[in-house]
Length: 257
Image (cartoon, rainbow, N blue to C red; front, top):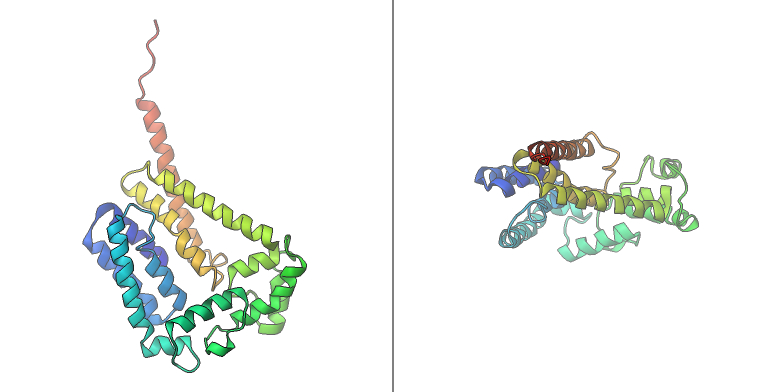
């Protein structure tokens, strides 16, 4: 849903069609209906943080509306049951527990449902410290997690990358994502029409991708996200290449004296 939402909001940013905004709203409601926590956050972020040209005023207004709507959604019984074992908690508790879950600190006191993510982080932390820079090898998390949690991978791609490939490998991956995102963004500014939509959408999709990586294994589920994103980028770069060829063919040849 977030991949499609990225595409729709990019098209809205470039064409200003209200129907696209309505379509985005429908897509944003899907993770709310199914109560997928990171899905709600990642999809919501595709509008105010799109890399497509969207005025600051629109970004601030939509961010305010989304934040307010998110607060009311958080208070619903369905979301409260999804978030906390007791079925009741505050935004502050959820935020603090989310940070603790990612960092590996205990979240037992908050009653937050982390689905063993904090436990997996704590379990793998000693291996990270033992081989901090270069990691423990590809898929090293699997043998540990299958034995302790009956899972092949931790629900955290950043944790998996750091354990398997070390802090150096994890940061290399992050820098590569950032470099590709920036390159696609500047390339998109030279395109027009549908070609620009492909490129801006592909660049903007790195934002929900990075968010999903904190709570899931999105880089393994390439059929659902990565393939679509890089297909968009590929189409955008192909259009840019054709644009350069066309520009050269239209350049008048120098007149020989």
